Image (cartoon, rainbow, N blue to C red; front, side, top):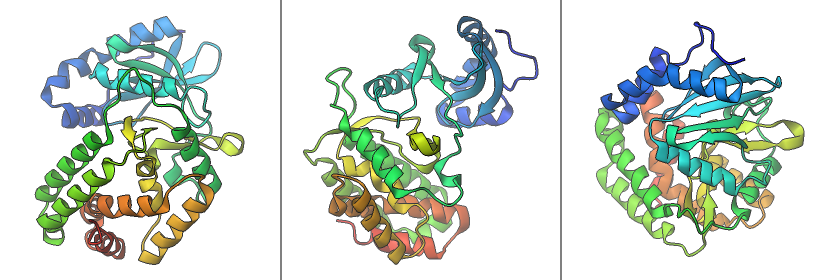
Amino acid sequence: MGRMAQHDPIMDAAARRRLVKRFGPAVEPWCDDLPATVAALADRWGLRVRSGLVGNTSRALLCDRADGTSAVLKLTPDPAIAAEEHAALSAWSASPQLVSVLDADLPLGALLLEAIEPGGPLARRPGGVPLRWMGVLLRELHAVPVPAEPEFPPLTAKVDAIFSSINWQRLAGEEVARHLPVDLVERSRNAALDLAEYPARALLHGDLHADNVLDGGPDRGLVAIDPRPCVGDPAFDAVDFAFLRVTRSGDFDRRVASMVRYTDGLDGDRLVAWCRTIAVFFAIRELRRSGPSERSDTLLALAKEAG
């Protein structure tokens, strides 16, 4: 078991476009070389590529292993991303709520990860997700000591990156700019940077949205993938969960109250404060996707309470 069949989608057009959008035209040679890189890793690790998976900073491939199990081969043109993810997943290696690393070639930017079964993203799980599962995931994420080495970036760096993205997205669309004043974005940014200086330190997933949390089945619960780790206030990791399926302000209030009830140690006041500061980001996504709506109005009203 090694070499891939000719029809296997190592690098399709859509995947190439996403990588070029993320890394620029300089990534093209890496994309061209990827089939050979995958072939070499498949020979080494006993893999047969089954299908491609969606990703923005990497190319992920669902593979069959020689022992009959499945795995995900994940490759990025930026080896530093793979090294940081590997270090974070190693810190969480004792927790069933994080995907396990089976092997790695960090100079190549390659990780071999377990395939999660049944594996559907949280956003598409029928009937929603038991809140106790969310509580377990958040508790497990933040229970590990922050490693001394390597030194993960602080949450302030993550906040800077988010608001750089917000400014770019706002300027990219007239519809968004019309509903999102510059001063609201700046006020939200300043409030978020103030929150990020909170002295509580936990190893954070850093990108814990609904597509990065998979269904591990009734025995395992939720499993997080694709961390972009940083260190800071544990309430930050709960923001995406707090906005999940929220349309009206009452939905948000109930959601936060339920999350606090089911998550030991989660500071509800800080979670609400984080949600207010990051609400502009969610409002932009809603406005770009479907224009003004009840949800975008709710998010913008929440953002106006930031600071």
